[in-house]
Image (cartoon, rainbow, N blue to C red; front, side, top):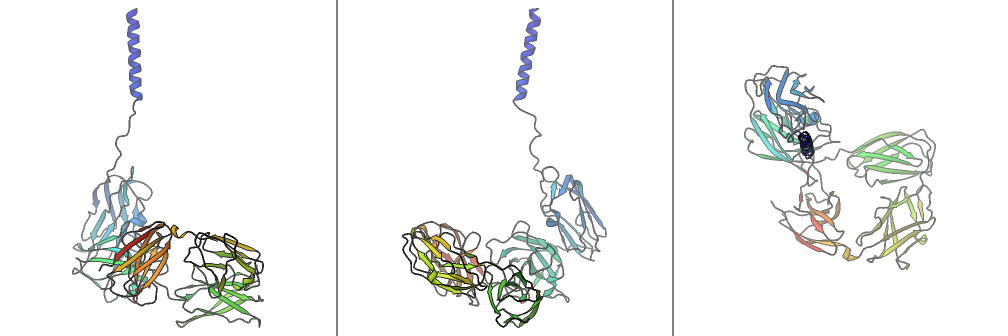
Length: 538
């Protein structure tokens, strides 16, 4: 009897031990699959010649999906309509490509899948798998390579289309606006590009930041870059091409105006405004007046008028200095009248080397300084003057600033009057200045400047210009009153001496003015002086 009890006790102990062991771990699915799908075969085979099929099947060793195929897969030369490529949304062991367009004779085609081919389970990509075939007796085998830069941005956007247009009797530069190129590729997530399976011949090489992904140049949306000379193959295969993309300035065009309040129209436009003029051709009252000033951020003119009068529509004439003239008609009706709202961009702190500038949502007409006061932190009156610029609708408060002070600017009722008769209620604006030791300073020396003038700009991390100086000779530049932050230095080669950076023009063969960036960001700290030398290398 005791023997049976001992056996039962032993069985129980063993069961408990097994259970405890089982709790210490759990069965897993093994290590994570990091192996990309492997190409096994294709029908017709990859690198086929005398190709005459209307369908291709490409097989892999496991189930695959196509990730972001519209962006990743590039067919060169392009086809219209594009071939259908599956699977889309599901998984398969093969890719099926069905052609809907007639293939060109004696042409090498390349289908680059980018990183779209991924395995079904873990999404591991088969990077830059390419299927190549020729409708002729042989495959074209020439190639070129290069890189993309941005004329203004330190780091260009990725996913830039690079294209070759065949230069023959039918070629003109205007083809880029309406015709797809002979060969295309894409930088995807880098700034480098390469074009393969090219034929012998002469080509125009361009780059597009192609917003519509349609392989044609749309100046309103796209950036463009181009190689100035004709690319000749095979002679130029050893070259490394750099394409500098830029946004062109559009030809001037006045767009349709719109009435946005009782006494105001906005006039949007494209291109450079120059001396854009707006003249109302419709019949108006004898006391009619207008005021025009530009928008601070957009390509728009604000057109204010008084008094309001009755009419169903108004006819305007728009001109500028480049022999542009157009007439525009717009609907006209009674609307709510705008009220006067003041604003300033400085926030709560005014830099010691900046002016206090304020503006309004309506057209400013007059400011009565007798109804304006400025006091400091000790409530002492601070002498000031106000300069109103009606052409920009901005007013500048001029006064002698002191460091580490606070100021209170007060406008009593009716101190400000706008163009349509509004006046202000009491307005109080409080702001202050920092200590000089709260700022940092950069002492910058330029070396190896071959041509003057140059513009030297200090920008923030978003490439907004914080400070700018024009340089006509060798000297050390001082950028002071900088808030603690990281800054970038860039130099603009102002070849036409107009004190601004000028973009390029593809049809005129003009490249944008060159910009050079200092290699490293400069970390400015409070109460620091940083001495830096910028050597402009060849």
